[in-house]
Image (cartoon, rainbow, N blue to C red):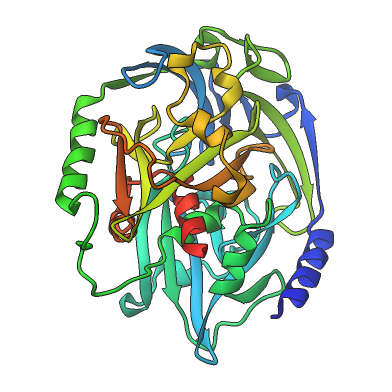
Length: 429
């Protein structure tokens, strides 16, 4: 498919998959309600997901204690991209998928993007196309297969199986699917709200090098040093999370239509009614988390002794299974820090905001997961650090070489979803 053909095809999918999304009071959510015992917002089937509350105590960041709503989705979903060579060129089977929280309707998604409730058809709807390619793949066909986390500030212990599976010529593209080269997908990454979050995380797991060993000559730190540093941060950071009912949250209030913070910060929980012609079911209701403000996720990159490196932050977030994962150099919503003194602002945020255009290698506003979040977007940036840039010696930052990044991505819970998007962007360059 040529680039022109792709854009024509996507516009057709946009028309065919038009959705009507309407905010409704919680009491009008079909199949959803507040549990009389816990106060959490749950589905009557007990499946899909729920919205509950947590109380957090943490030694990471400027605030040591808080309460918040959070999404509980214990099911492990499947995010999978099928790949094959066409005329000797690697192609990826991508899906045009409209989700209720997308700011622009259809975005480019993995071949399969489905929760367990979806692909086991709890909703009574149609089957998920291509799911059998990923549920029982031939061992020799698996290119990547790893459990990865999602947003640790919005999900509690959420994981998805990120998979890349090689398929044969018998696998063809259905109506809402197309074969694109890796180069085409990399180019589309730079376009605002084009490639969705689930596709980006799978792309980050696609191996770039093979049989090259785990060490990279010229790396700022050895692989053992990086793993030891990350393990130490996990052992030393203290994060405790206790469940609370939504009605018990301090500084949060419930109206008939939202659960919101008293200062209008962070995010709201809302109810939505959705009508769609091209999903597994034609109509449904669900809660959505609606962020307040545009996020910033920035990765500083540079060459050290000629070797490409990126600066990662060991972040503690309440929803992580293992306390700490590697995040971008900067990851925040600046408005949420505006009331704090300068010393409590995220480190390197001022450098990111004052970046020079000639040092900005990637700059795109991309959507987060549209199935659970409404209009959640972040500005993703790759910034080339100047040669004389300060190399931090603090315990929460390290420069990792490109090969060390790929080695960590072979395993789950090493790198958060925002960092994985930026790794995919870094590779696309």
